Length: 196
Image 1 (spheres, rainbow, N blue to C red):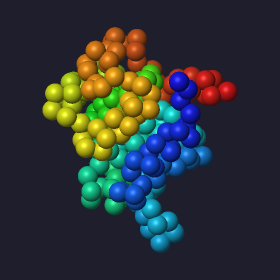
Image 2 (tube, one colour):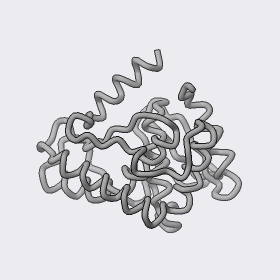
Image 3 (cartoon, rainbow, N blue to C red):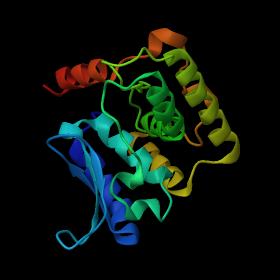
């Protein structure tokens, strides 16, 4: 089954718009979460350039964010662009572990490849293996203790649509070490090629 971004937008909006006043929006630039305001009556999860992987990543942040954070632009998180130093990169990775674990589960449910992203191509070298280990450990925790409610709801929706067996199990999460890691840029290039 193909991974059409329009299907993903429709699945998300059917699942969450009525209850959470939130829509998934294909953006032309960088991703951002925008709470409802005077110019727009609904919350927007804007994902980058129409990429399926970007949409899943931004959805994962929304699934992880609590009610108060969902009223703040970009959930109130700081974001330093590519070029972070070692300390900044560690802080980035700490806030990314849970969202990337959720993204991995959404990817598995959609039968789509997942790539952990340290998202710092021009900055300090990241200990990507350690970061991936942390994401994998979080997957194990979520599988044992349960995913956040909205994440589980969308996992179920995606698995049903893409005909993936539920409940998700650890066997469905391919963990092969460093060779599995790709940079965001490489993942985007691959997705661009696949979408042509």
